[in-house]
Image (cartoon, rainbow, N blue to C red; front, top):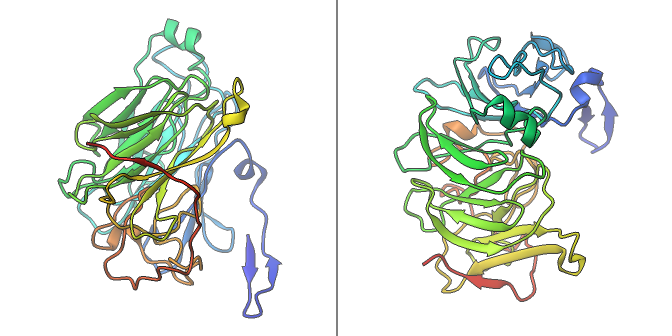
Length: 345
């Protein structure tokens, strides 16, 4: 953790413990207890701005899994769990004012409430595989990417979408499955997706890329709106959506890496054929993007608004335009050359 003073110089404040810095995890900053000060959520516990653990539940270690954001050995298969990425998101998935911590990884989705960060209020398996399937697909090591959280079906409530090696699945916050789609993601098992309401109908579409294709899926039932060949070896990455050319409409940006055809490697951008995609922000600045973490002009807000408390938001890894914010249309733009023009219908 580094402090920035008024002169824009930085001083080191503290180091995180070694386990917090290791083993592929994303760290989330959010005011989870609504005291006006942001907390730091990691797989090893929750820290305040001074680096003090306000929730200390141990940490995930190889073959010994205990504490916050973790599970023990897999009783379903009798196999030991090995270290793999843990992913965290924050959103309000119930009726109170406090956000929940949503954790994915190790074949689980877990939801933690503000009054108990030691035991998940809800927990369910991502893929209920047999012992044979675990061995033959290497699922003993990795499964479950970063959660995409938003209103997939226009019911006014946040749902949770997660990719594994075989499927992209969307759940209600009680663990009820909304839909699932078969994918080809054997390279890692923990890619992720972006949400965006292209048609401005209240339903967030899912933008996802596996090892072979870029998909745009209808949020309420998973049906394909768009499919385009984009190869990747995959790890933890995902496509993003932003207005990258300043035309007032969203574009999709995705990477491609093909070891068999390296001349095609790079970044691909897609835009609407008939200029009919909705307006969005011109920025997507980080892996745990959730709109309120960054201003439209690229400045980090001194005091971040709580995403889950703002009208039309309560999402994570979704872009949109905030109707209350002033348009700053030319302050933070990237120019693309000859974008691919695509539409969904």
